[in-house]
Structures are given as structure tokens and as C-alpha cells.
Length: 316
Ligand code: A3P
Ligand code: EST
Image 1 (cartoon, rainbow, N blue to C red):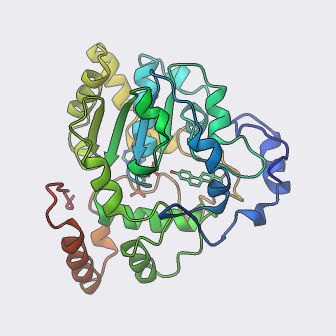
Image 2 (image 1 turned 60 degrees about the vertical axis):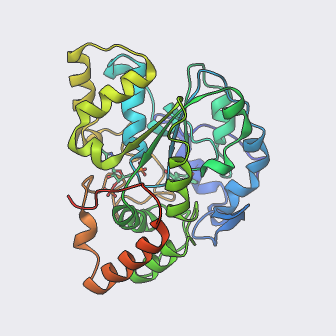
């Protein structure tokens, strides 16, 4: 199956749906996770790991690193718009998952992230959810810039729960209570949120790493985009920044088929179960956690964040 026909999942590719239907979806749908070193991960991604480990980064690659459901797509859309100087036609040239290839992505019948990246001209934007200790060596060797975006654990776990329902590569998440336990135990794809956010936080003083927070981006998108521009060494006119912020607002991205993942085959992502662009707010966890769940989560959180100066805004 790995040698099967390989095509990018494009927005305008009529064959994609037929391909998805015929590609042996049972091989990826609702499977147990495999294991990549110390983290649980989709078995198909684990199978593609040798190519990821050997990936050749280029000096002018920009890596977008996140724990899943932390605003990856939002940050990707912002960066693609910055890279195209706010030209929105160019931003609509393809789906976000093709404009910003997903490094470790591998699934039967479609181009892997590495294969997509090899075909992408520089300067490339690269998406990853890998924890810092599993990053392929060439990103360090080539001294690539990295933007990490973190989001508070409670909103991540709720968003991840809905994502498990709609993105069928994930195992069945069960009840929210069961999923909360799996998340706290690090038994979800990409492993422990705590280790992920803290691992990248330890690198925050490196000159070529910018550590951002979803909650700051919600509260002050203008200020956060200025931080990004300064980090990239780019100057952009104020009206261009305003256009980029409008284009990347939740409401605009939700209705934009090149940003909202609706071009993915429904066999892989079923937006009728939960849309990819779900709520886009901070503090939604409070609509989902019971008082008892919140107390248990807080206790666990304090144990696992003890001694760290990494702080999150949990409230809206
Ligand atoms: P919710 O499920 O809480 O709504 P990722 O891209 O890392 O998978 O993250 C997805 C989360 O980011 C989802 O959170 C999604 O709604 C939110 N998101 C996507 N675009 C956004 C935007 N423009 N503004 C705010 N949140 C956004
Ligand atoms: C999309 C966004 C994301 O942040 C993580 C993942 C993990 C699994 C991915 C899915 C996704 C997009 C759709 C797939 C899936 C693996 C197979 C499927 O084709 C790429």
C-alpha cells in the first residue's frame, strides 16, 4: 500500500475523493496508536519516520511547531500571508495543508509531508507537531528559524477531543472523561502536552526561536504579528497587516475552503461531527469540564508544571 499512487491532496483535484475511497482507509481509520521513540503516534506516521529523520532542512525554512490543537492552522495562515505580502489571491492558491506541508505526515495513497516539502520551492513553511527532542537534526544543523505556539492545556484537551471525533485517523476518544484521563497520562498522539510545551520552552532563549501563545494572539493579534515580523526581519505596511489580520480572523478562516480543511475527503475528516474551525476562543473548557474534572485536572497540572516558569492564561 505504501507504494501506491501518490498525489497531493489538492483543493481542485477531482480524483482525491475517489482515491481516498479506494486507498485502503481501514489501514488508517480508528486504529490504535503506534509508538515513536517515547511518544504515541499514528502507525502510518511511525512507518514514515526514517524519511522524516533523514529530512534535509534548508537554512531559509521556517518551522511552525505546536502541540496539536494549539493554533497551528491559524499561525500557518498568518505566515503564508506574510510570506506573500498580504496578497490574498496567492494565499488562496491551495489548501493550507499543501501550502504549509506537515513534516511527519504519512498516509497511504497521498504524498507524505517529506515528499511534498521536496517539491516545495524555498522559502518553505514547514509544519510539525514533534516534541523538540524528536526534531530531525538538520533543522539545528541548518540553524532554521522556528515559531512555536502554545495553548493552555484545558482548551487544547477540549479541542483535541472534538478533533478525535471528526478526524478519523484517531482512535475513538470515548467519553470526555475517558479522554481527559488519556490526555493527562500522555496516551494521545504526540504524547504529553506538559513535556511538549516545557521542552520547547527550554529553548526559548535561542535567538532563532520565537515562543508564542494562542491566548496572546487572541487578545492582541496586532501586537503578536508585530513580534512575528520583527522575528522574521520583515517590514510590512500597516494596511497590509490589517488585511492579513482580517483574512486570518476566525470568521474569515471558517468560511475559507483553503483554510478550513473542508477540502479533505469526509472519510478522513467529517466536519458534520465537528467542524475543524470549531469555536476559536479561549476558555471554552469551562463549558465542558465538570467541577470534579476541573479539580482533578488542576491537581495533575500543578504536579506536572511544578518548578516551571511557563504560565498560561486559562480564562477567556
Ligand atoms: P477549537 O477547537 O477550540 O475551536 P490546530 O490548527 O493546531 O489544529 O488548532 C485548531 C484550533 O485552533 C481550533 O480550536 C480552531 O478553531 C482554532 N483556530 C483556527 N483558526 C483560528 C483563528 N483564526 N482564530 C482563532 N482560533 C482559530
Ligand atoms: C490534520 C491536522 C493536524 O494538526 C494533525 C493531523 C493528524 C492526522 C492527519 C490530519 C491532521 C489531516 C488528515 C490526514 C491525517 C493523517 C491521514 C490524513 O490524510 C493527513
